[in-house]
Length: 72
Picture (spheres, rainbow, N blue to C red):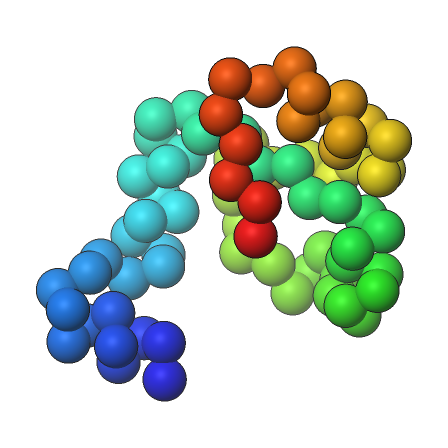
């Protein structure tokens, strides 16, 4: 459903957006605790060059030191 809505609005695919973000050096930090609660596994996520898995404490520290944060 999301893919068709993105296409209808002329938005690039998730794969294209992730590729561009990687080229710009955008870092993605994934909270391990949130992954566990949601039942997600590393193998299920898109391969991305600047991705790392962090504990909740490290995640909070990274947020406090960042200039910009997008939390999904």
